[in-house]
Structures are given as structure tokens and as C-alpha cells.
Amino acid sequence: MSGDGTPLACSARGCRAPASWGVRWNNPRLHTPERRKVWLACDDHRGSLEEFLRARAFHRDTLPVADLPEDPGPAGPTPGDRPEGAS
Image 1 (spheres, rainbow, N blue to C red):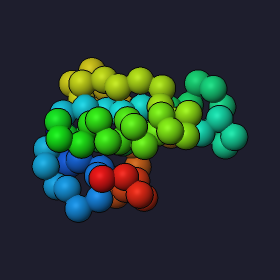
Image 2 (cartoon, rainbow, N blue to C red):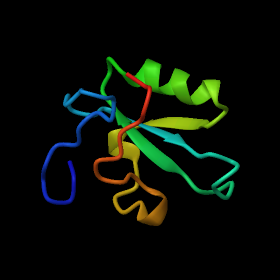
Image 3 (tube, rainbow, N blue to C red):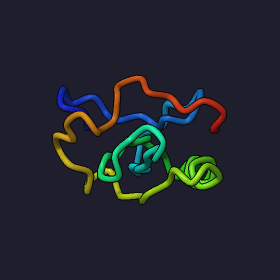
């Protein structure tokens, strides 16, 4: 759930299913090594989002949504952040 109680939705384009996973990544050309961006994934889209990121060497790890930090700060998910080209 988000801070306002709204269920977190999958980041895959066109999907509004509840998110079960936080797919954590960074672009080493743009981000410091410790920085983590997060795409939220439902069970159906976890694999395709991880594959998209692995193909670019951006995938770092995947955690259950319940294990993501409550307040991820500036390195956390951006509301409305949707991956381009991933389904």
C-alpha cells in the first residue's frame, strides 16, 4: 500500500494489477552504485520486467513489496513511473 492507503499497482504498461514485487535497478551510467530505482510488478509481469532490465545490465535485485523500505527516499519509486518497452 502507498502512504495514503492506495494499493500499489504494477508498473508494466497497461497493467493496473496489485504489485507483489519491487524490481530494483539502476543505470550505472546515470546513477551511483548504491542508488536503487524501483519498478513495481505483479506476479504476471515480474519476469518480463526483470528480463528487460537484465538485457541492459540494470537489474540489481527483486524483493517482495512487503520488504521494500517504507520511505525509500530519493532512490525509491516515482509515482507514475512506467517502464517504456516492457510489458
